Length: 204
Image 1 (cartoon, one colour):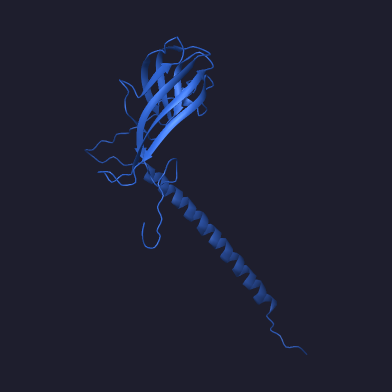
Image 2: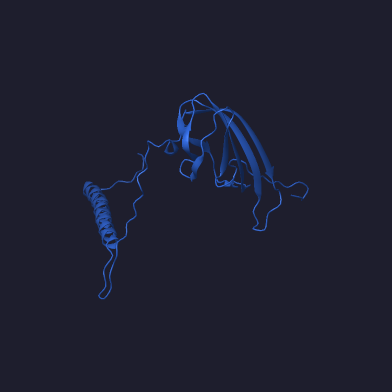
């Protein structure tokens, strides 16, 4: 006859009951712990006011963004069609007095007015412009009709635009050119025009 280990029916039932009781106890303790944790979190969210002290609540609200403005949209408007770009970039591979690597550049963009507009928008990210006169850019017409004067220029960080506001409107079908000079950081963040270094034979 095969040898085996046998327990009584009563002992087996008792073991099952003890196991079920242990599981129920664990579940109950977990629920109580969760409730206590939530209660402590709610109490800590309410800052007590001590006698002789005052508590001030400050709230900051961001101004509403007018999505109807073309410079608040991530797609360039179709009012102007670029014809050509002339871009010159000069990187400096030794750090300046502030320990930064920089580059300097200039650009001339020629474009045709597709729809009458008094705004010019171009992409611009982390560039510092050298003023041409009183503004960041200079505008000229390529035809007989002179270009409107520039009113203001602004940099919109959210959409990474340089926005040129004009005192008058560009004429549909006419060509214009816009010049700019700028400089920026030649960083090593692998974004845009960046700097990369490597070691070869122990030399950088």
